[in-house]
Amino acid sequence: MQINTEELEFLVGNHDILCEMPQISVLPMFSDKIVAFLGALSRELLNDKRSKKFVDVISYAYWIRKASIEKNRDKHIDRKCRIGRGVAFHVAPSNVPVNFAVSMTSSMLAGNITLIRVSNKKFEQVDIICDAMNKLLEDEFNYLAGYICVIRYDHSDIITQELSDICDVRIVWGGNRTIREIRKAVLPPRAIEMTFADRHSIAVIDSDYYLLQDADEVAKGFYTDTYYTDQNACSSPRLVVWTGNKVEEARKLFWSKLGELAVKDYDMKPIQAVDKYTSFCTLGMGHKGMKLVSDDNYVVRIEVDNLYPELMEYKNSGGYFFEYYAGELDDIVPVLTKQCQTVSVLGIDKKDIRDIVYKYGVRGVDRIVLLGQTMGLEFIWDGYKMIENMSRFVYIGEYE
Image (cartoon, rainbow, N blue to C red; front, side, top):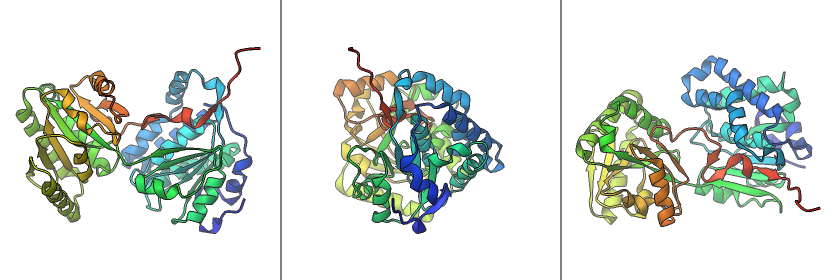
């Protein structure tokens, strides 16, 4: 295999490991070796003083604790019939630093040899995790060194094709444009692909229930869902739908508390304020029935009097929200298009949202979670059971 390795920056692994990857044996799903490695990685991250600055690194470290992994292992009842597919080539997004490690975790637990391209955008979280992996792979877990490479490279159709040529699974994060670019590289005949396209998410809040909660805690949870990633994560709510009898009172308190938190913790750039206003003007030129509400640039709300699929195309970041009052829960159906990923709820039964999905046969909604938990790490994402999809099922015929 010939790869332009001079153009690659290796964060984990090296040229020799990369070239040997197609010959490395796959592992069974939830291999004891991988479970042990992830448990050790968790300990390394939790002991690294740098990790304490990053909620996402700490969350990842807790997610891959040995006890946590073993709990998830027990949920995979057919795991003894599953084995890795081969080389899994991951293209990580540029807007969620720890995503590369989350994708890697599913791949390794599936039994694959894992090759990850991370963004050229530098994140300290990436360095912390890669440093911890290198420490383990150079010592106690050196027998797994051939199973992991983390690389960077500038855009190159040639390199992407060379890496795609050796893969058995290709996992592409980063949105529609990235997917279109990566798909220019042809896959081997038996390789499969998992893509994570541009999506949007919404939150549904029952006003009566909200007013009985700790408003500061709710604000912290919603802040984590949204501002922590500048609303760039597909799971970050961009539309807040209100139900119940005390909407005005609840709205006033909710946005006030969120604004206080944003002013204290969020670094607002001047260009973001301009972009928010531009987005509103663009939307207003094509659609009626909306009102701009903003005490400052930290929380900008667009009140709308109806929901329609195109509304979510006018999205922005850094505290830009659509807001709607729903007379009944079914009113949200128009925005549950196949671009809708997550519905987060407060005071709404998650099963009621699921019932709407089935009742109307909508093409969207892959996740229904509690408000404040949209950034939670999970092995099911965008409708994929990640570990299962990255593994191969070995069937034993029932008939002699």
